[in-house]
Image 1 (tube, helix red, strand yellow):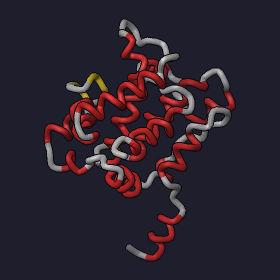
Image 2 (cartoon, one colour; image 1 turned 135 degrees about the horizontal axis):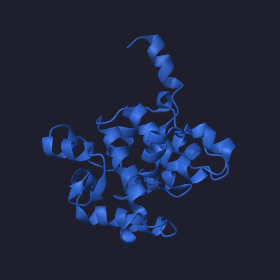
Image 3 (cartoon, one colour; image 1 turned 45 degrees about the horizontal axis):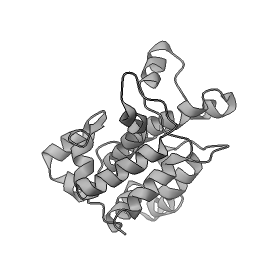
Image 4 (cartoon, one colour; image 1 turned 60 degrees about the horizontal axis):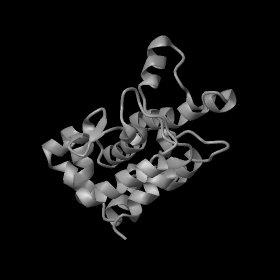
Length: 197
């Protein structure tokens, strides 16, 4: 690595700091790929006991975390999330927290109560996918910004910052994207980091 590259790394915001900006209730700041340091994210998760490395050499977990949806503990992103969190007990703690955090969210389509927290569980799954290099920072930022930006659609000066789609195809895709409650991104990340303490 050159000195110039080292200099660039110094200007990357810590992942947590980016999520704090994203979670600002009054004036959230969208995530930017150039501010996402995957090495720092992975290190923070591993140091807190999250077993990101389990995904790296397990084809089944790679397929799971790359799934486009979080369905349940045993479907979609679920199996990979359960594995890296350390088992069903920790998964259940995260799910229960996400349900409480999302209690004021609407249920999705014909979904039951548990569909209220789908956006937060998807966000947690995508954060794990990012840390395990299964999605790019660009993909992560776009998906996460849409999840947060949806909550600000009626405030044009904020929603414009989130680059929400305006074409028919994009609007349909945005509708299918589960949102997360305002301010929840940083709380979700910190809850996951606190699981094994």
